Image 1 (cartoon, rainbow, N blue to C red):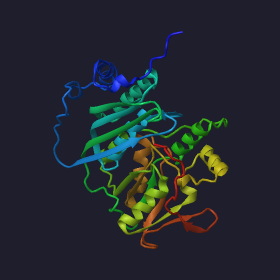
Image 2 (image 1 turned 90 degrees about the horizontal axis):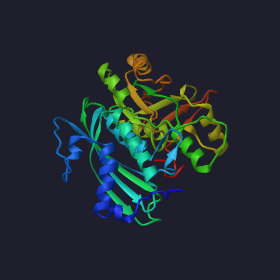
Image 3 (image 1 turned 120 degrees about the vertical axis):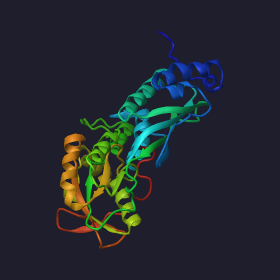
Image 4 (image 1 turned 90 degrees about the vertical axis):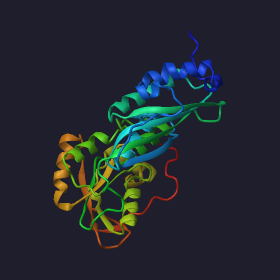
Length: 335
């Protein structure tokens, strides 16, 4: 039986082994002229307003239903740009790899990243590779930074207007629930998978349709609860949402009942919220469903001038309660 190839400390030593890993794997998967120039820094041609973001990914497990750490790293950074109406153009990527990590697993992750890049047209133009001794990195950590050209400078968390409709792009809580199932080895009969995906194609369609968007944000850690509370505070408004209108799949509902979680607090990695003028909200839904594959997009609430800085959740039973910011660490290392 052939010996399984693994990453060695020499792969981070700056010599022959490192050069071979970078050339054969990273340069091949992420091939573009800027990266292939192999300079100490990428030369970029940019003009106008620029968005710049960075994120580090330490998800456990590295592979989960619907994605892996590589897909997550690219989608996560591209989505942060997209939420600012910035067309993703350039990414950096740094790998911290634990000694003994399987080369085949690394190839799978890198190819997943390359596939995800095609969805937005972004390119990885620079990067770094470090190898640390066994036991120091839990397999693999990835950092990605992204730069994009802003196409609409007016979108902001501080720009919600009284009367705006709040829209969610799809059902919520899938990523957090999928990670929980993978981590705890749950064998429930379920097809549940993470919503991990690149959101730029949807945002591009909204921009092309000249939709007047006041705010956008992907509901990652802290779920939609965190986004809504951050918006209420940043724009100095109140937000009211209707529980009955928030799409949640049966599998996520079941896991929440089993563990005592709320789906509103669970992380998403391919779901976002929008605040748009009420009179165009139905048209926005139509654009998202027809051109953005957001079949479950729904209006879940409105911006009000009541309870400034607070989010109110209306239940199907006629009662109301505050939807507060999540407290504590619900699920560590979900991204």
